[in-house]
Length: 301
Image 1 (cartoon, rainbow, N blue to C red):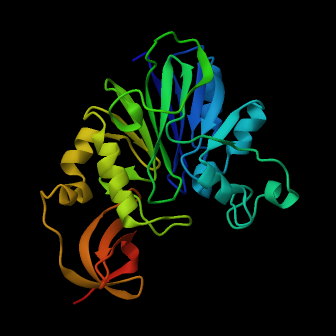
Image 2 (cartoon, one colour):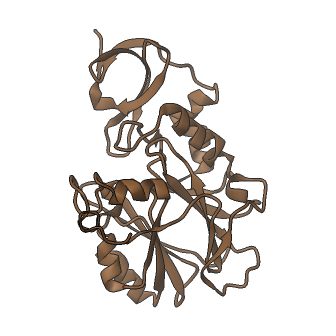
């Protein structure tokens, strides 16, 4: 892969990450998410003589999009993209594009969308890099992870050119192998996984399949840059993530009775979470599974 720059800014309250990515100094760049604070990344872009062309949003939650307008103020032509499903949640009647609780100003005014669309299979060529969106639903319905690898032609001349749909290899997103990094949003963290109770969520099965059927199919050396907290790798999570270890059949499921979200349940796993708290995998009496905040689980004496 070309020389790769990944600069990270972590929000002090949300612990959400915003990333600045480039193939080297003095060329095109892009952002992944925009929860901020973006000021350090603006400074980094200027110091490294980078020209950001895109901001790629993993999903619509406020802690991942709240400072997108600040990036646009600095680079008015910045192409901000999000999956169509997430864009509807971001800009629709209950969207969070303008503030944490109410509709975006744009939606109220009936303006044309400020966010472009990007979908799985729609690769972007940015300098010497290629970005392949992977659909990883669960935490939200339209969640995208962004796989970044070297362009197959290695020409390094693309500045946001789209390759169109359709895989060109056998791995996730058509990835044919080699060195890569992946931005996983709120699907997978170091030693933990995303919950499926946030606004716009789908379900446990989607989350498990996104992790085991997509992210864990990437090469072991792939570096994972999550939406919260520190980086990890496919190899490390494959071996050490407690959720993945149970899914692999290496560790046994728990059978402790508990109360979760005020309902009777079985506690399959109480694992760590990115914020120092816990994340719980529970099973309801009907046999369906769920991933909920550990703080909402009461263990029985």
